[in-house]
Image (cartoon, rainbow, N blue to C red; front, side):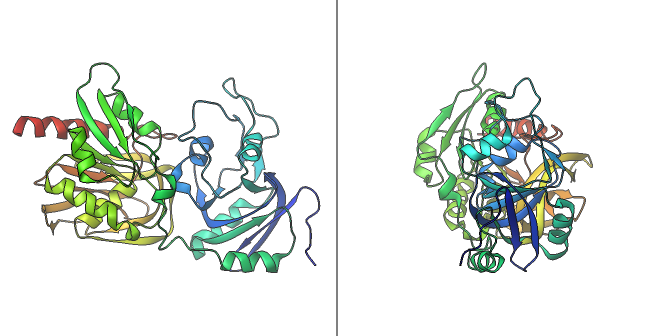
Length: 377
């Protein structure tokens, strides 16, 4: 016989059997996904609507969430992508002049199942010690064993191919702001809305193409540069995107990639990728630019990384490459560049929505790369 939760109650079960009991938050129902934690104290609306969180249940380490409500301007896409949401102390009433509704109302409207009132510090410590793992949340049943069986039967993130689930169905254009200086093709692997905005602010007309785009589709735009976006899933499954990027690099079209685009760049250079124990997610991650020595605080969302030597150079089919950025918490590769070809990438989010603007210079670096390629062409 199915056991029902009392009204307002919910349970969270990790795949190793750890159980948390709390209150339902958002929609009533049941959900499963990969449990990950985000360390940002703000920016929850951008986090929820980031397509990179497809099939993940996000645990917020900051205890108070929802204070500023939800507005119509800050979403990074047209919908919430997280599979579920975990908070400790949700705001009872939002307080911000831009808010049009509460976070709970938005979660209910979009059918996102969550849980509140649990010890998110304990849950985060558990994930740090044992690694990201599958998890289930239910506000319709108290049957822990049944939910655990569903969790164990759900797909893992390793081996997941998700970009086609989040990419745009049709191409579209974000016009340059002010005088048009360049044309860039952005391959949408799960792009955030602020990214083409940051490019447009620099006089770039951005043509967003689906993840299924071919080199012929790209060349038809006659771009000055090509950009590969962030996105969800395991980069080890992205053979099609890797093959496309190799064609871009063969033609020496200036390239800039972020997040998933960094991992695909690494694979195109002949490097491997691997799954991090619990990943980097939040808006307070320290990274060092090895080309300048400068340390920047950056916005992250990744559970995979590129396997490359941090010191010196390495050989690629396009000449020597090097690691340009490294995470200071764990020495994870956070940026790559070719030394004799116009291509570079970073693992984090320079569009910084939400987050610090320390890394905005990377868009200017892309502009310089396209400028120099025009001069030498």
